[in-house]
Length: 503
Image 1 (cartoon, helix red, strand yellow):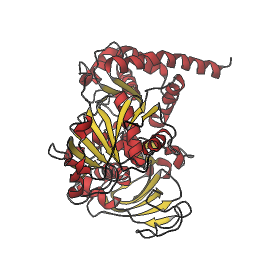
Image 2 (image 1 turned 90 degrees about the vertical axis):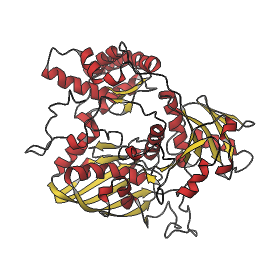
Image 3 (image 1 turned 120 degrees about the vertical axis):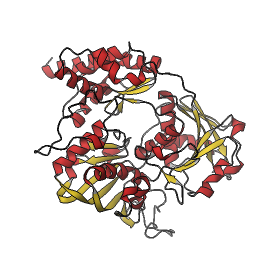
Image 4 (image 1 turned 30 degrees about the vertical axis):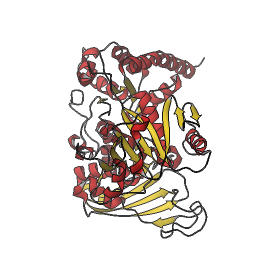
């Protein structure tokens, strides 16, 4: 056996020792572990090795399994409650702590970093969720909600409301949930009770309700109370239309998966969810593009100041376009989607100001629909208040993706070979492509990839969990982008002098 084979076998042995520890943390403490955002739930030993190798994209080197295994051994012996723990971040912080103090104690370090989770309750009554519509976004929301219930238990998908498409409607909808040409097969098992109109997905009973009038539904007849209604039809976008959901017995809040009109608050999770008040019963999750660009624009504006800019979205085609040339109410969208690049409009640039008011009037935008089924790109062409270099901006955004509270919204990649399909299944709102960054004085051009289906759906679920009071505590805490240190003379950000003790 050569040295490479020996190293691989050694890694697998360590990963196999980790598997029961990861399972025990989840089973006994409701603690979910990850490595720089890659969840270690339902994984194999090879998945664990790959996750540790993935760390090189974040911290410029692979994460040794020898570093994370001792942390896991300590965690299972601690009195932890419900939380999401990033082993990559913990290992990085512990390495910095050990470098400063070789006599530091690992258990004491973990106790300090994870103080919020010590003794926390693992019991949580899940909040009922209803999906109104079951199209592309609706089915992905179902997949995510089912997985999140099994992982955290904070929200529970109870029903789906649709209009019947025929006698075998529920069988066809179960098939669409089971198989997806873009996102692959459902991770689990699906059974259908045609008589009761129920789909059982990994044991979760999803009641299908056939209705045309949202106000006439009695959710309490199905045992559903205090429900969040997630409207993914886009049929109603203003307060009056969405208010029909709240007339239904058992419904208390409505969330739209499209830009809201009028005085409906548009929420980009990670940016302005704190604007949600207890009295808010109707909200919007904005658009996929708004979610992709707002976090990046926010941190850039806070850091460097944005004078003005233009956002050009290269967007995959969607179901509102025609497969072949035909009449369409929108300009150009009637032309065959799979054959053409279609120039169209986007309101995403203006919508940024609804989440970040200081961006009001600073951005213009257009969109080009292209013949791909999923994953889009936003090109941010910006004029800044401050002169910047490419390396400086990239290093700043890489650190934001690693250290900040926006780590679930902003990802960063620095690979010469990535293309759109590599981002299918990304849970981030947007991924900055560092190699494409252009900087010249105060002129900056950034390229941001985003899975306009799955990444956006994860943002929607984050809002749902926020409304339910069920967002998991993510530890260790991260540094706010505004607190990131200034770059040194070489354009690189200085090391964090207090990163090991930042609370």
